Image 1: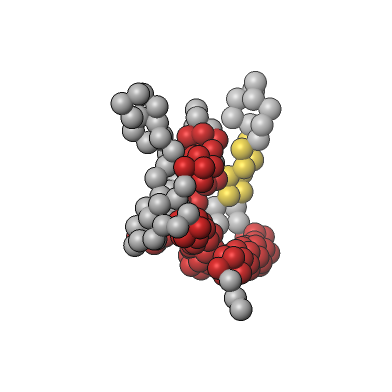
Image 2: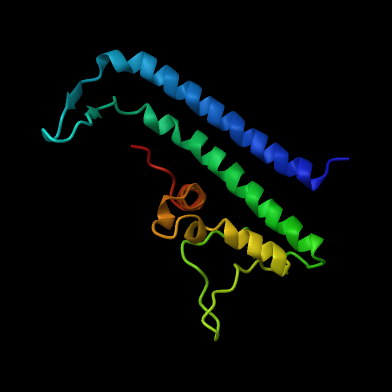
Length: 169
């Protein structure tokens, strides 16, 4: 019998296959096109030792990567939502159409005591689970720059792909 944990693992495995496919596509693309690419390397200022490498890639090839990136993003984000669903069920709750794994760039609105509650999961995740989810939120992982966290970037890119389509540059 296939369990929900098995299904979540299948989503993660599929995401890994998409990522491996993406790496192979990029490698093929670079091998086929890199020799014809104009490139510049320069030092922006005398005091800056880092080099800036500007590369202009031939048009068209990157657009083939967008669906593969989108599929990987979807599978990763979907695995988190499946986990939220199972956490609600494990707490004796009833998942709803709004049950998903919350990923927040800022803490929830503080309560009347001035304390932000842990993120809410529709359907009824336990307080202990909500506290754990709160500990891996972007605003907790990197309070100064939550937008730099992998989990918030995953969330935003997944939304972008789902609603608008990714444009890779």
